[in-house]
Length: 134
Image (cartoon, rainbow, N blue to C red; front, side):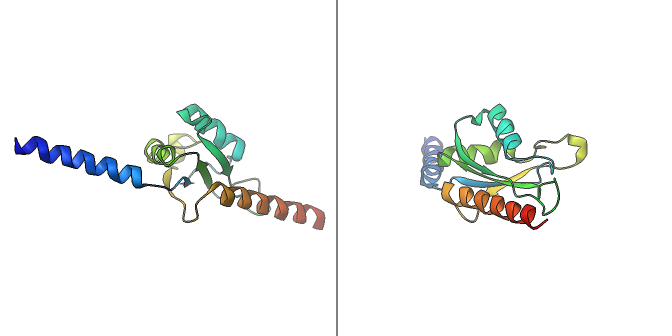
């Protein structure tokens, strides 16, 4: 009847919206401040994202061993980025639930593997400058 055709239309519209999504870079917010890029990669791998991302950058607090509690991850496909948002939002990422940090994942304002790699290179140069200045 009319019900089945309208629900089929809704499913089709949702599928169309998902396939129109082109963004691949996400920002994981409210992650454990002790995480570095390699630890974020291990967690993503354990969550089923092994080989599904091509760049990870965790900005660090200047002069501190702690991160700024967020990370940029570029995925190889828009579907992987969307799945990361679903899987990681609303749960602790790299910390215990009692730490009170519940991860939120959004699409990054700037997109692409080149952006994430450039941010990581820029941070590395800044760390090197600081260590030379000491």
